[in-house]
Length: 385
Image (cartoon, rainbow, N blue to C red):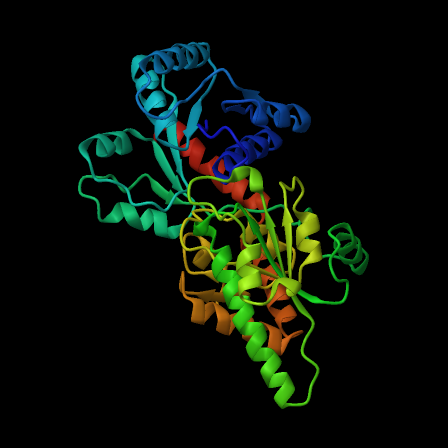
C-alpha cells in the first residue's frame, strides 16, 4: 500500500515491489490512490486497486470508507501479508487488522530518513509491526536510540536492480541517446536527474561545475593544453514541483557564466536507460533524503562512476574511491574538488564505472533482493521475524 498518488520515488518502490513479487510467483495487489498507477499497472501486468483514498491528516469520513473497503478485502482472504509505507496507510492497516480475527502479517517498509518521533503512539504502532524493513542502514540506526522500540523485527534490506535491463551502453546506444537528447556526441557529459527541489542539490551542482570547469581551464591554459570539452546535463521532472522548488536553474548557470556549457532537459522520462546511455558520469548531490536511490542503483548498474553525497542509502551503495566518490552533503568545496578531479583525470573515471557495475552484480541484483524480501515476509507470516 502507498498513499502517494503520483510518480514519486516512494510510490515507484511500492509498484516495483508488487511487480517483483508477482514475477516471483506470488499474488500481489498494489493499493494506490489516483489513476497513474492503475493505468501503469494495466500496461505492465501489475494488479492495482485504487479504491482507497488514503488521505493525509484528519479526515474521518474518508478514513472510515477506506477502513470498510480494506477490511472487506482482507476478510475475504485477500492477503497473507500487508506491506505499508507511510503513516496514513500504516494507521489504517493497524486498525483494520486489529478488528479482524485472522492473522495477516503487517510489514512497514521504511524508506525515509526523517527522524522518528519517539511518541507513545509511534512506539505502539512500531511494536505492532510484524516486520520493519529499512532500505538503508542509517534508517535502522535511527530506531536503536528510541526507548521502548522493539529492535528484533527491524531488518535492513538494500534494494536491487535489473542488471540485464540496466547495463553499460554500447557505442551505438550512446550515439543514439545523445542524438535523441540533442547532446554533444564528443563531449565528456556529467549529469543528474530528479525533481527540481533544493533537497536534490542541483543548484549546488551547477555552482560546483562552474568552479571545477574554471579551475580546469586555467590549468589547461598554464600547461598550454586545450581545455577539456565538458558539459553538464540536468534532467528534471517539472511536473513534480512543490513548495520551495527552484524557479529555474538556467538563471544560476547564466549568473556563473556557464550557460553555454549546461544542457537542461525538462520533462518526465519513463525509461531512464536513455539517460544513463547518454552520460559519462552521474552525480547525486542531495542535501538529504535518498532513503532509497533508484537512480544510484541504475546508474551504477549502467557502468557510470557516481559522485554522491553521504546521505541516506548512498554510503551503502557507493564504495568510496572504488566505485565512485562520497562527499559531505551541502559541501560546495568537496563537490567541486571531486568534479575537478573527475574532469582532469578522465578517462580514468571509467575504471570507477566498471567497478560500480561489478559491485552491483555482486551485491545488488534484483533477483537476490526479491529472494531476501520473500524470506523476511515468510518469517513475518509465521510470526518469526
